[in-house]
Image (cartoon, rainbow, N blue to C red; front, side, top):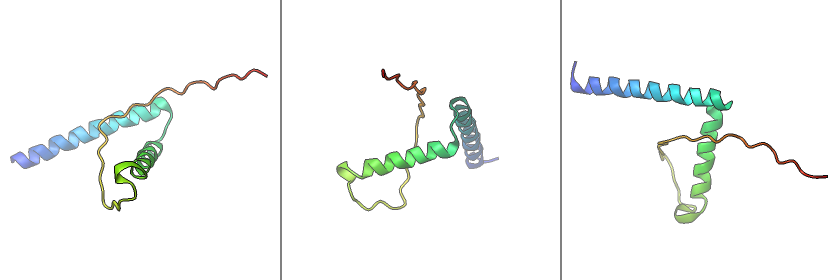
Length: 81
């Protein structure tokens, strides 16, 4: 077994572990993987819609998500009649 195949196997195992963690987070917080992906894309679209990247053509870009933090939903405030 050469070094490249060992690295590839290690990366695949790490990816599988990360995906398992993400799926656990999804189940814990009652969200779907698609919900999380849509949030990433929406956030990126908002970020490039203003600021230094405003209206710059961005094609074939990749962004890496290093951490995911989901907050508990707070209960709706009770309004007084």
